[in-house]
Image (cartoon, rainbow, N blue to C red; front, side):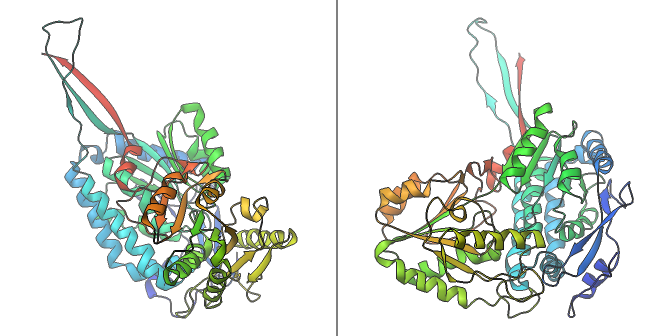
Length: 501
């Protein structure tokens, strides 16, 4: 294997963490893969090997599910009160916050995102998420029901419901927000009393593994959270199809989501899927351009465009089209592309060679079909996976770059003339994850928001997330919701109890 290379200026604890081969967490112990195999994790800013991680496979998933089953059915977790579960989650949040700098650096090295973004967004939002669900642990109540039984006149019944944890859950998280997506899934699962087998993305497993080191100190019993790194076609497939897993939560591509549905079909296990998107971002002529223009740029260039809800289809009312394009291009040219560890960088690299090839291939495809790059369109430098922020104009609805999810800092821009036209065009996609509307006419905003088929519609803002606000998709953007009270339903089942008095 190649030597591990770590940037200068990296936190001492991060250096120590990366200097040792990382194991998997099963039943409270750090263990190697049953096969003894490891895989290399690469720093996307340099292409250098960043760490070596145990490569989980079916046998490791079997061990992890067995541990989670014991913890759920007979371990101390099953006997803990809701208040005690909430305290564990709150302590986990405190520990994560204490190590904020360390987690932010790990996320930047592993994923590529600017350190400043990880410091103010990824880690604090994960902390807030655990605290939000800590509060929910004591509020998952059933209800009493007055029933009428026409064939039993005079009989009295006490009828009530219980909301019970679904059991062992498999959670598969993506590489674009590795720590935050783990928190999105772990928070509601643990608040409800489930146990978890978590598979982080093979490109970015490090913050999930570091988070695993905090669970024992936070008071979670062994086996409640198990973390098995590995590849989707092996560890992910084994987890999705495991007969003792009661529910699978997945965030990733629509293509893989469909495979998970098939893998789960034999057991009819519950599934939630947060999948791809091709989100429309609509700028009306009456919008405040001082916020709409930078907002449109941020909608696509945030996190290097590696966001399922990125505003990747920009629709601009005809009379201001050139003005908005000029403004978005100016914003794009002001972005400093470089290593996430460079404090001057505002956009880091794409996550991997595979993703770099995908994004540059889409840019070439768009321009071969007649699109023009108002800016960008090329790679940056000759080391690492950097690409320029790109604005494509002269695009047409049937172009591949307009129809398919690129998952990079590439936006297609097109003009429109009226609200009826844009409502139809915005919905002309297999996806329905998010949308943006920019206008000072609040009536127009509400009318269009009601017509767009998407799980989240932002008005005069974009990429606003909160632990209390549900997030998920229509159509092929997924099933179910993350965050908010709605996410708890993914991990609960309702039991009705009827007692004749």
